[in-house]
Image (tube, rainbow, N blue to C red; front, side):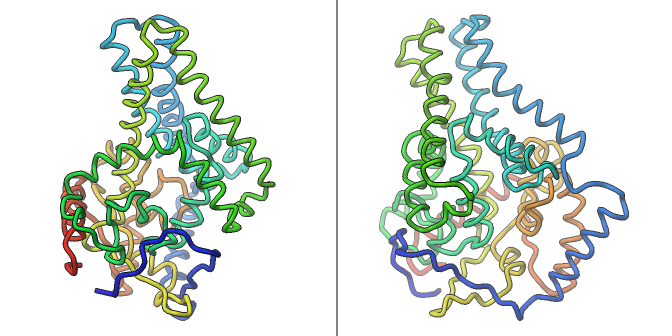
Length: 377
């Protein structure tokens, strides 16, 4: 195990690691050629198809229909109201994993305006698209599993340890039990403090320039989006629903915890498991492998044979394919996985995949347990 690094998540300046340009060039070129040939030979677009468009309508309906049923007084029974708020949580997760995810990667449509508008749907459900794109597209997808650069493996609370390079604390012995609760708070953090913290941190790091917009414009967009979200998700239910204000707050918390848990678990199962690596750059900020090989070493699929599961989570069980080709709509990943796996094995490279969702949960639990013991990973 490599020597543990400082746990500070603040970096004074954004000096990114550099991937090797001498390693894995033939693999990358061969894989891209085969994927291009797949779309050309089958005369299909790499963007959304009819299935994806139907899924878009389904996920938006799953989120907004229960809300409208409550606000208009169609659903008044307390158990019906609880069910509606739970569906809001699953709908929010579904919108995030399918529509927003593909759109903000530019993978939904070849029309940039369509991608922009659908990507901004994340603002409607309480988060903030520009921050999301920086954290996910820039940091997570480029520097996957690299401590202090991939925020997905830098938990905001030090009582969770996701990499063997994080400082060990005795409380980590129990993280395989309590980490799941904190996963559910992910979107609670979004709608309260995280977006504000990220926006100012990314400005300091110079990353908001990636959005090609002035910081003042981003600030006002964030403020307006938060006001709009709280207005329709909190203020209007308090006014129009026959539920005390504190009940609405608790129901909102239920919604956020369901969506947060769903999103966090789906994403974390692909990267924090015993098989995946957590490489670090050398003193010159150089990585050992090329970017493509790095993605293979730090990413794992799960449940590839479950068509229904794949449909609902936006193909995110095919994380290897997604990380290698984030600009391709997820509806194509199942077919592309055969090409990616065969090419990786042909070049003697890893291709990690858990057979089921439950086996991936077990693997992640084992990893949390190992990381909860010093010098065991």
